[in-house]
Image 1: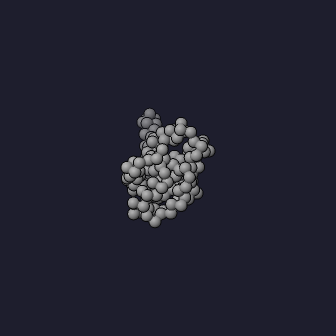
Image 2: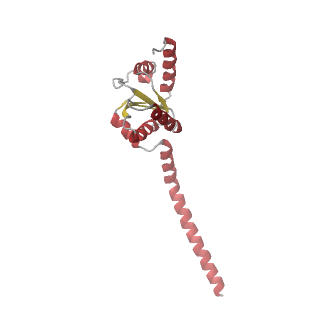
Image 3: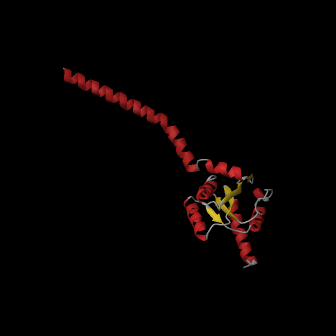
Length: 175
């Protein structure tokens, strides 16, 4: 069934808005996935703050041409049946969501992506991105690293204080 021109215009406007605020966009081939599996992927993506879009590649190209950052981006990889994972919050999550889903569903194949700077990401770039910790995991690691010396000082101080108290108690009982 053909899509009306008004519907296409609306789709392109929505895509343009979504892509202009995206930190990373990752696309994958999904031929062979069932509707139930696509719904499962959408649910997993939603939990991670990622939007999954299944749209014609031509409409994605039109939307990208309307965004200054993507005007010169190579779109030759946008062929075949593709789905797009887009996040405006985390650079890593679109790749991570699709890569995790692809582990259990061989029909989903990572194909590439785009950074927020308009750079084209290869399949290997997307896989490397998926292997990185998410933004929240990185923040947790930095906080843990920053708190480590504080915890060491607290542990040392509490150990010394308990030793002093024990020594004072023993001395007091000895008199």
